[in-house]
Amino acid sequence: MMRLLAIESSCDETSAAIIEDGNVRSLIVSSQIQIHAEYGGVVPELATREHLTHLQPVIRQALEQAGLNTSELDAICATQGPGLPPALMIGWKAAQSMAFALELPLIGINHVEAHLYSPWFQGNPPRACWEEFQPNISLVISGGHTLLAQVNRPLEHTIIGGTQDDAAGECFDKCAKMLRLGYPGGPVIDRLALKGNPKAHSFARPMLNQDNCDFSFSGLKTSVRYYLDKHPGLAEDDTALPDLCASIQAAIVEVLVKKTIRAAKGLQFSCITLSGGVACNTGLRKAFQEVCEQNGFNLRIASPNLCTDNAAMIGLLGERYFHEAPPQKNWQADIRPSWRLARPA
Ligand code: KG4
Ligand code: ZN
Image 1 (spheres, rainbow, N blue to C red):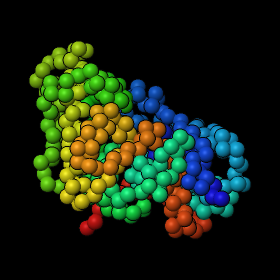
Image 2: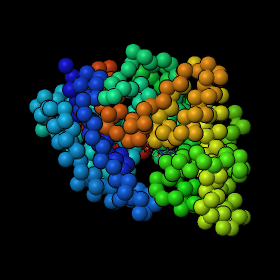
Image 3: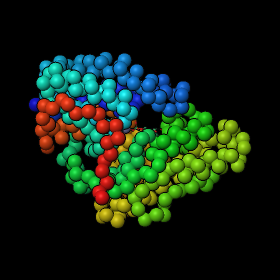
Image 4: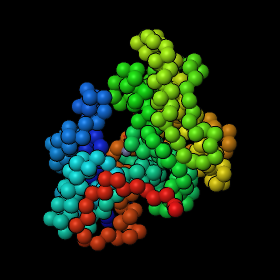
């Protein structure tokens, strides 16, 4: 039997999970959204303070819920990067100290890679469904990252495209900020868009027609800004919000859907996966479901509780790494705040 403690603290969620033989035995997530909402975005100093306050209780709760004590653990695993350096530091240093004190292997996980494999972690409580794995084109869309990868086998992926500027989630959040909808704006735009007309306003679809797998969302954000400047009072008119939100969401979704489908067709993959916070978006899920059904693609979307940041995805991927390449008891490694999943040269 293999038991692993996983820790996530790369941004504004403090999370710990206990994984036992591919099953999530407990998952605790302490979210800081309310704290950062007042400032319209994540404030690194506040995030760090919150991680520091909550990490120990979150770890203790995860152990308690799983009915374990630290002497029953076989490995410790934590997000090593990418992320906010001081936030990463809190979780990583805690993992490092525990691994050192308990003389356990320490596994450093890339946060984006954990999102990438999260569609293969399903169920309630979640478990790793590696036996269901199919080669796929994977779209990771979160607040900090937007990338497309070709995944041939578990742990074997090649990045084929990504955003050249803002991430998709950042675009949702910044557009929401212009409409004074609070932070994070993605879920609010999603909700308002349900009642709006996606064709009411026309916003830019940057890079849609370029024959590559890259994205750009800052142009779309700028197009929304200019549009609002040209139509004074629109953003202040509550009755205009549903149409504005539906039109902004339609632009983001169209680019993501079309470029992902084009990549899957071009590279002859029959499975598409979606993960990251933006994969919770109702309009995006519906659009992907429709187009995948029409084109005969198998679609796998990470379950909503594993789309946003959590330690379960870190631990389930960590366990796979543990089996594929057992880590040494090396407790020296440092955080990797700008750890990028490499693109081939
Ligand atoms: O994966 P995540 O929790 O954190 C990062 O690793 O960045 O993603 C957070 C992002 C935020 O930008 C948030 O606005 C977006 O995911 N998001 C959504 C929805 N739920 C969360 N965007 C659009 N529609 C949603 N329903
Ligand atoms: Zn994330």
